[in-house]
Image (cartoon, rainbow over all chains, first blue to last red; front, side):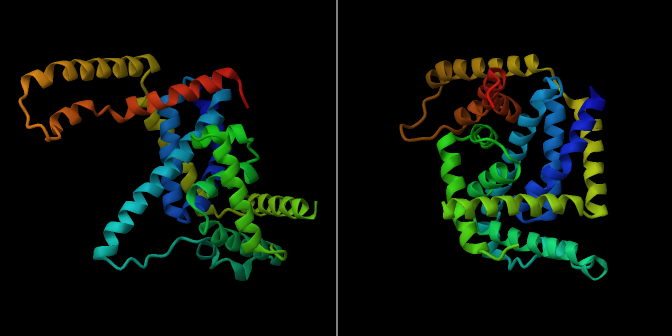
Length: 176
Length: 115
């Protein structure tokens, strides 16, 4: 079982990280979310059938993202009173700013497109962001997305529709 | 039809751009993910508890809470409008038991084989 679980996590860690990074906009927080999610999966669900790990891991990651968002909202309200928080957001542009000079043009364009997408996603409410990434990028069905987000099918459809409309308006016809 | 095609193109482009970003993920991030995985596997297995022991813990906690609801009001003579924080604290479940309770519906969904 440990090998199977190791293989499962190795196959899914990059996607989980990118999901968390796009959802939160913060690279280090995304790493924490992924580690916490892996820990929970191993601690609580290692004895489940391997076919359950995927849905379970998705659900755990989304819950961690939601918890992060709730904690951040509280923290922002508290710190706004005492501190001027000007820390970087850990955006995709900042993550890759030192590599563009040595990188092929097509990779640079792809990274720029990714940076623009991340900025656009950050304008969405958290639930819309989650629904959009799970449905559009991860290719999950409405039902699977609802299970991961612990909400109804109807809520997923509403979040997704609104997210898609907003992103169409923001990204326009020329992206990427 | 034109609007629907537009949305589909955006969806395809989003998927492609994010998938491309996975391929070009920097070495430092990949290394940290590897470390996170190793830490989760080594610490997680040590601290894992069988599901039935957690479920029994939840049942026991619920039983204690119900008992306290029945007994404590008779012992305490709190003012009418007091909150009774001791009673509230006794109702708080352990985080793991609460997560397990929330996951029961999810387990049913998994067992149904719904997708």
